[in-house]
Image (cartoon, rainbow, N blue to C red):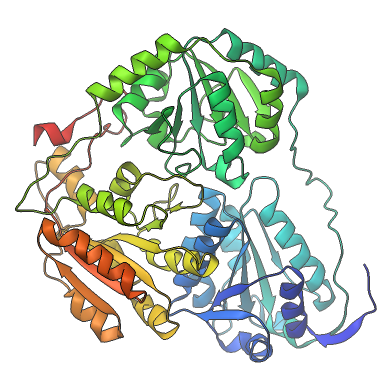
Length: 563
């Protein structure tokens, strides 16, 4: 501890702790047990953004963290306020995003008595947080907050929750903020085992057909430059997971695009024919691997990950290296030399030529893929945030991301309603960037009330809404596997999104023809205000390619060519 103690309430200490952690913005919604904290926030030099639903607060905090690399912060009241955070906390946990969620709680003396707006939020979130706390002594609050930010942002990042009973926030303490954190048993490994790194370098030197499989951990570790240098040095192609998109420049000749269920054919073929798979910050989830027994059948596997629990969890690996991707790639760069991969890269070039991403454009209907291409041409440096569904896959496939933290999406949990509030967080974190929320008409309605938030606070987000009148991804599966029996997936004509935008005081633009797509995008960018562009797209367009669930990743349905 350093500094002379200052007498203050727990609520004031809460604010002081956020100052010490250099928190720039907190996303929240007030409630009765939070009144002492909100009274302190009244005069605080912190940007508090009032959302219209607590779920939006937690998604916005995550979007902020993804866009900036900093810890996102959200605040909700007890009971229903706290439980409304659960989906967003689970989302951050699945995608390894640094976040601290604060919740109010009933007075300590009433915990366990089923008091008004009481919920055991630490018990509820134990499986979906990296760690959580119920503050039982106000004097512990500064230490707990310091620990929470440390835990959230170190090792494998993730969400931490702090539950604060109202008597903790009103009690007086002698405030001193810790200058360091010492947690017994929590010592993440960063540098990696030197012998394992040498073993990996030796395996790389012998490889004729290597593939680098890059996940979200590359972005979380700020290792994109190292990944580029590594790939170019060993002349190995790179494929990425959904959350790893942007970790490697998409315009580089070595890039294969996304792999897995909706990955490119050539990425999936390369995985299946490789002799060495170098996984960096990825966890071999089912949407990537398909049928596990058939995944990369001829490849020796190197797995670089900071979380030892991920090593050989789904796929048995040959050379595990536990540590931070940035450190380990830097170390590997000192050992590896250029591989003889000319024949391999020539083969991949043929696959790229013969099996490109493909859709049939039309003059009388708007293709969703075309919209993404036009956004890319009009604003190639934009941050693209997505909801979940078909539009998410098209945004992953057809926008050319050149930098990390420019593609923000819900990966592991697949949370509809995520994109719009996450875009709010991204825009507040990166006000210099144009931010698009690429959305479906289904997902957008889950948190559309946040139009009030962006209009009131003049946050210029562009909602590119793909309006097909369906819950599109579920409809696609019903078409393919349930004989076109569209059970409860039709939402046609449910909302006039232009009128909705205008009702909130935003700009609404409807686009019915392909020729109107680019002018609408340019108008929205130039407006520099909240905008909904209601794109009336081809209703039964499918995401292609597609690997059916349970199939090997080279057993690919090319839906666009067979429609």
